[in-house]
Amino acid sequence: MKILIVVLIGATVIGGFVGAELTYTSFPITGEIIGGVGTFSILMGLGAFFSAQDRKNSGKELPQVMREVFDRMLGQSSAQTQPAPKPGKPEPGAELTASVQFQFLSAVGTLLSIQLLPRYAQASKAFPAIMTNKIASGYVFGFHDALLERLGLYTPANKESAQALIEKSYKHLFGQQAGCSLFSMSLNSQENVEFQKGRMNGGNEVIAYLDGKKPPLGLGQIVNMGLVA
Image 1 (cartoon, one colour):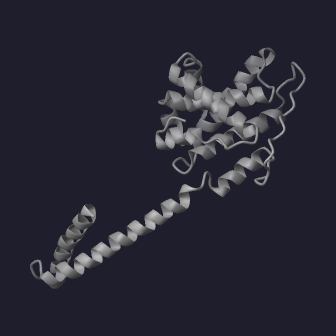
Image 2 (cartoon, helix red, strand yellow):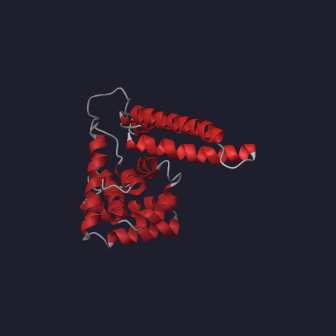
């Protein structure tokens, strides 16, 4: 109630000045009343509008358009409730073919880029924020690492080719020089506590999504809202 009174008084004072300007007089009582009531009504109307918007959006876990993109990436229907089948592992020593690389790059690129919306229309624009945040950079690395392992493409036999594919994805997402810098920094940050925390989070989220659970949102929470995923 006290806040309401303060707002009303403030609106009245502002209304007085507005009325004075419109009638070319000095702070008329008529201007105070008309301007105050009008300004107060506008403030209350805006407050009610944003309050309604907050209530409307509070129950939404993820916009439907984003959910559909996530579902299409791995051939899931938004109506599915059962866990997605686990991808089969290739034979030991199998090479990372061009087709497999393309599918991996497309999937990881989309699943990470969409988390950065709407603040960053392109992942490359988020490079400074990710480069300077160990949790965020760890999340990106863990996301790549866990997806490769889940697909059976990251084994001791092909570790070098798998890391090369991760670096290629970094360059694809953030640009040649920026991607190379971020990948190099990530390799040198494996022992960093915050990096490890982010890496575990990124890995857990992509695996949870593959198992039919909620879509990965951690990178957006870290970079866009400053939260710890």
